[in-house]
Image 1 (tube, rainbow, N blue to C red):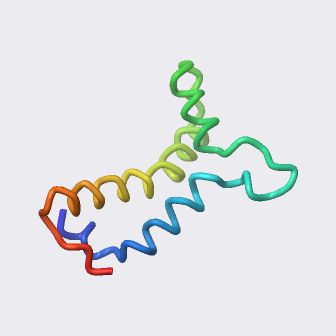
Image 2: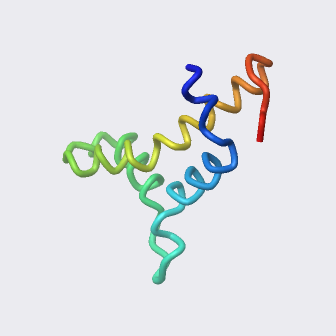
Length: 81
């Protein structure tokens, strides 16, 4: 897990936020992909490979950020940045 600690926290936050809201920041402001894919997952309709890839693409940075923040808050590592 030490490789997660090497990712600068501010970069991880920026990437996670950007991918969490994409493409909602672009007109005509559609639903963010992450929200759409999570609804599909909950509804059991997440079956296409492209949709699964999309969920992984948009969800991975948020997952890494959560792991990093838990490690910081638990005192396992220091927030260097």
